[in-house]
Image (tube, rainbow, N blue to C red):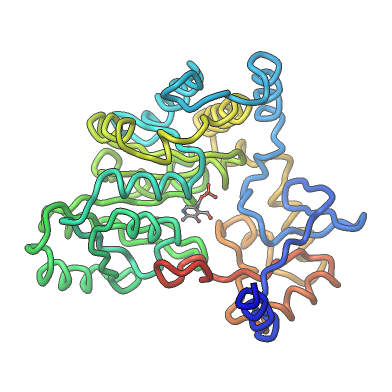
Length: 361
Ligand SMILES: Cc1ncc(COP(=O)(O)O)c(C=O)c1O
């Protein structure tokens, strides 16, 4: 106990203490706190779909039809036809043979990697890969090697040096990096994988819904659909819902159903969540990007920002990443406080990359 108290006090002293700050309500690009509206710089609900009437109606209908919970894991009795409908939709959306839904992006990454890779294998990860990817790699017990951020040449040198010592090998990246908003060089990474007999895994959490035709993501936008071995993504960001998926070959998906512990040993996502995710997918497939943006959210966001001297509407629309990101803790806290007083909600964020194995990135 004393250790933990000392840890918390030290965090406080260094202005690194994490705290929960509840809002009493939210809407696209808005947070409500103490009865006041704030422009929300901190959410991943890039298109405002979390409040879209189509998603809300789909969730409501599923609630009435199936109830609140799914009652069991998918392999017991929690499996519903709509889970499969969603998976078939995701597979088609991502141009892959099959897909599997996971309960969250964190559970996907920490389930997929240990299920497919082990002690004799290697995982080559971009240095800025998300914490869930790194945690998954650690759980797999494969050797984790990290290449410089967005540097395929560094990866190539590492593969030349280390690839031969391992059985299976995976190269892992995000397509849109969550904290920096930059894009991975997917084609050169894929070429390196092919040269060195590696699989490629791309985390499209921040690209899905935003990039590519109909929001299919960066893999599709770069003409690589069907070529990337493991395409992971979430419903919890631009798609406005919750949960995650992996799109891959039928063999990989069937293997995961049999071995991914986060899939096997967890209750299936509630039917209203699955129904809302399906509705979001249909919205994407239905039309142009503008039709996916709910309630003029980003435009309104831009106007509010401009009124308060913030970034322009164009920037608000174009950046899927949080540009309230803090370069260091103290300016972050200052900006956060300034944000509060100017009625812009800009939660201080620290990178979720961190040292692998560290609970406090
Ligand atoms: C790149 C990336 N992967 C995975 C996740 C985890 O997704 P979820 O929030 O659905 O657990 C996140 C979430 O922040 C992310 O940014």
